[in-house]
Amino acid sequence: MPLFARRGSKLLLLALLATLLAAGAGCSTLGYYWQAFDGQMELVRKARPIPEVIADPATAQELKVRLEHARQIRDFASSALSLPDNGSYRRYADLKREYVVWNVFASAEFSVQPREWCFPVAGCVGYRGYFAQAGADAFAASLRRADGDVYVAGVPAYSTLGWLDDPVLSTFVTYPRTELARLVFHELSHQIAYAPGDSTFNESFAVTVETEGVQRWLAAYGTPEERAAVELAQRRRAGFIALVGRHRERLAQLYASGLAPAPMRVEKARAFDAMRADYAALKQQWGGFPGYDWWFEQPLNNAQLASVAIYTQLVPGFQRLLADSGGDLPRFYATVEALAKLPEAQRRAALGAERISAQDRGVRVTAPCSARSPGFPARACCRCPPPSAAIPRRA
Image (cartoon, rainbow, N blue to C red; front, side, top):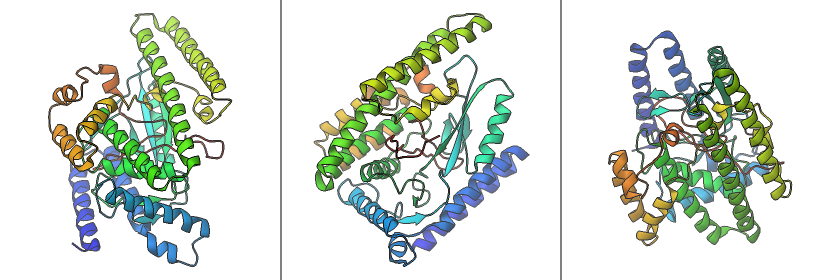
């Protein structure tokens, strides 16, 4: 089907869905869905074919180079990794802002589990996203008045799961090549297999694909410096996630202890102080690397912890499936697609992870700056850039 006709039919479907949703929604819900629809349409309006942008004399040379990298990575994704060969990441949109959406996370004062909001198709997720920071801040303020913990995070990318052709955005096109490859491979993998409401399954699969994809891309195109940088970034990322996971578990135990509210607040503050101290020690082990300082410089709370999930929980199981497939990615994808259709308990058993605690199931996002879609019908997740003093803060 011609590109315009295909995109036009999908936009018509989205508009119809928006109308049906609005028919049964209150005023506040209608406004939320409308901003999501309008924000998505902004991306559609601004997206231009990458070859056209590169050929444009007004395009800066640095951007042309970045877009050439993006085009090469996108072609590799389909030709070498058998990821969907469609219009996603073949267009470019300059949003002229740092983030594409802002996500609002909320938790009760004495709980590390996030509050959830439910959306058509995507299911229930532990965030609510807005295309305008003002909208996110206003909603966060309303939640704070209810005495809960609230955290607002700007995010650079999200996926519509193939409902629309997701463009390369100005919010992440400046990432290093390996991180750009990681993001594209991860997001495209969500178009292959998706289990509604099972973020751990979906994200662990995408992480497995991105990890394998980056290794294959590095083998084909990477420099020795890029290979070393990827290995170092992975170690640091794993250290950060492990640290947050340990303290999240300790806080969960504290909140389950039955302490009265006043002493509980004292112990909660001490727990977050201990978390900062452990990060300072980890940072020393990293030789003073400041890449995660921005996260710890904020007032830490339960909602911020909820924005970081142990999204690698099922990765070993997926890696085993990939090995059992002999490294044949199409065969691996077919196995995962079949698993996505099974009940959650059967999926866990097949991956060698029969039990995931309610605590882990409650967390629905993947990384410090991660996102799902800011509405319907997409389910998005983004990949954070490698923390660096040269990269703006991600929150």
